[in-house]
Image 1 (cartoon, rainbow, N blue to C red):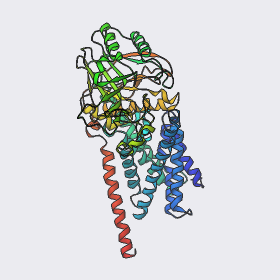
Image 2 (image 1 turned 180 degrees about the vertical axis):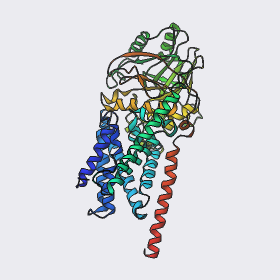
Image 3 (image 1 turned 45 degrees about the vertical axis):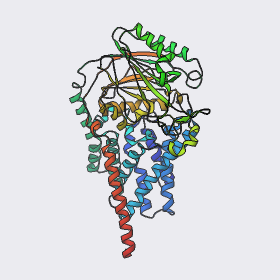
Length: 536
């Protein structure tokens, strides 16, 4: 490699990650080289070729990951400058720590099992990063193929962690060839690298060809999706909730016909303060009921801000707030209401939150600071959640809807919870207007395509603004709307009740990586004490 200075290697790695990512560079194949410069840096550290090796690997790996995080997720600052700083800095920090830990453990094992150590450590990090209060899985490495669904139809067996394994395997193969000192790749090495890249793609094509006729059978109820395009910074939470609802219903009227089974409105479309203790008395709910009388049998899914007041004897949650002038507690929620044509009202509370923006991390410990959380739903402080994934049943019980709210759509195994509870279709309701016309809303849409492949469920996506659309079971997008334009789209959507391997088993690759990582760490500690004891 001609790059001599570690800064150039760091920046090269960061730029390769960035250029491969959806909506920033979209040159997906570059991801198969992105780790190579970092592996060169790690090799130099192992061979003592750079002074201050204990700190330089951390600094230069941090620079690479910071470059990637900054250039790919800079748009967060449109919603919260502090949130952007925290997300970009700490995600880069966590990645650098993982890379340095890989280096230290590899050294203790005399350079053996390097690939296994890094792959297991990285996969374990991503798995755990999906499951704690500081979660930020936007740059989970397997997400890189979100705009190339033709490459990864086998995600129905592996989820995004399978993509991560594939990426690391190719990067290590390229690096090992370079390590041999050959200036020109041999025919054998080119064949191996090409095979490792293209065989999974051929498998993807074969899966599509085999399943394409299977997954289009069954009913195709017509769904209408509304994109109202209400400014979240000025109009949405400061204007009249009655006027906004009237605007949305007038817009919806243009798309409804006698075949329409269900209509979807976006996240927090209802900005009235709806108390779930008496939700049927809310003006917004009554207006929706009146709209349904004009369209008998129509089901409505709509996002809302709501609250619940705990009754005497009920134990408040860790996110509950106390009234200033009373000994009573309540919780605020980001809610999906489902009004069936038969008069039933079902609901689901959003349960995956952007750390520090929608919810203060570790609320049981940091509750005094929860008012510092900036909620992207019209309230401040930490939102309440629910443990189970609710499936919403339509009037005729044909539609069994997974009501995925905004950020939740980035979590594969989390979405599986809806499918395991019986969902045969996914509705994503979101408000992507916070980020402006940036890669943020485009990436968010792209990640939804991964969920269709993993679950083989079609998606109806209603965004306040950004991109509303339909996505089929292979990740193909239909009828995408324009940014900052009120629109209504409708399409028949395929229902599916079969469970994929990934839905049944979830992130098993991540769990295996955690076990392997723990074993590697324990074994490296054993080797260290053994050498000290015998002066090895």
